[in-house]
Amino acid sequence: MDGDDTTDERAVNMGRMMRTVGVDPEAAFAAGLGLPMARAVRKCSRCRTVAECSHWLADPDHADGDRHGFCPNADLFDRLRRG
Image: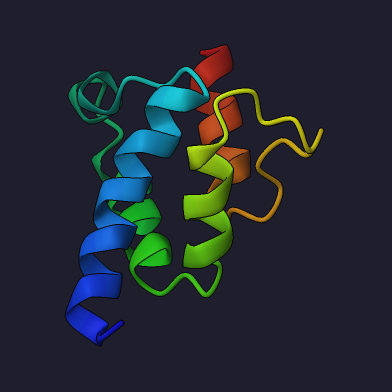
């Protein structure tokens, strides 16, 4: 996979991850969280666990029992979900 494909996959995965864990991406930006979200985008764009992320997202039951602790944005997404 070349760099551009990985970058595209990371961008898609970020939105999918947010929705999967119960965070509305548009609402997060609209709520004045532009800077934290910009940081999240940057973290995702540099993420080294893109394959693990894609695999986790492909499992509809997330049967491995692991939440999304591999994700560099897990803490932010958890805070956003709790509101």
